[in-house]
Length: 109
Image 1 (tube, rainbow, N blue to C red):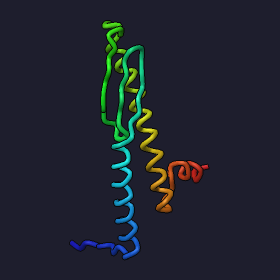
Image 2 (cartoon, rainbow, N blue to C red):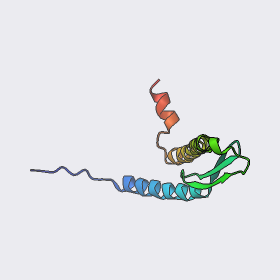
Image 3 (cartoon, rainbow, N blue to C red):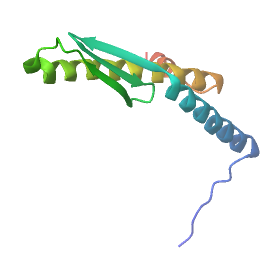
Image 4 (tube, rainbow, N blue to C red):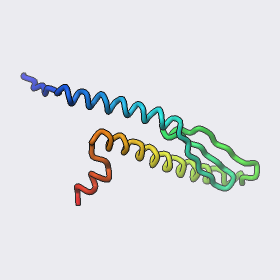
């Protein structure tokens, strides 16, 4: 059995290394970014990496409604965080000369 190996050019290797370095830089940035969402006495803070930073429940929050309100606030905070993350990565793709999500969609039309 023979294996075919594809040689990676020095230029491609440099680009891959640069992309990895940029992705690590963006990841560090995302760790510092925090987004929040509120729902009737419940406040949720999530990092740009979609990790929960904090949850605050006011004493005035209806105990029976906490599960639903918490779920709502978490989902909205996570969606906001995903948007922030995607925007940051689009910048990396654009900087690297790679097609962005928007560019890929436009190619299909």
